[in-house]
Amino acid sequence: MDETRWPAAAEAEIARLVRELESAEAYEQRLRQIVLDVHDTLARGDASRALSMLNDALRVIDDQTDVVAPYDAERPRG
Image 1 (cartoon, rainbow, N blue to C red):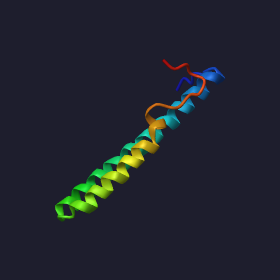
Image 2: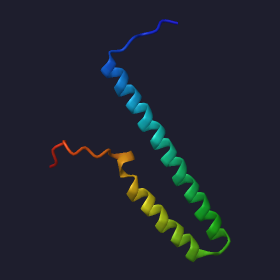
Image 3: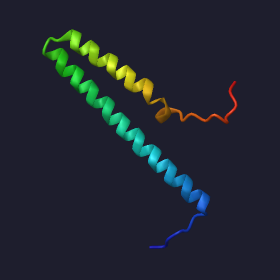
Image 4: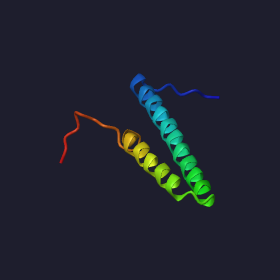
């Protein structure tokens, strides 16, 4: 197999992107599990518990905005 050597900066960027992808996949899995758990809870007829679980899911989503759009203090806004 012919191994291509990338410049160090490119390798670092690739490693960062791989970590970001892994983090996004874990986040997606967590949200999918929440949806399944809420579905099961609703099927059992416990709507108030399901609502509480959805509120928790919103907190998870709110806490993980950096997975979707990393915060960059140096990037100009506007």
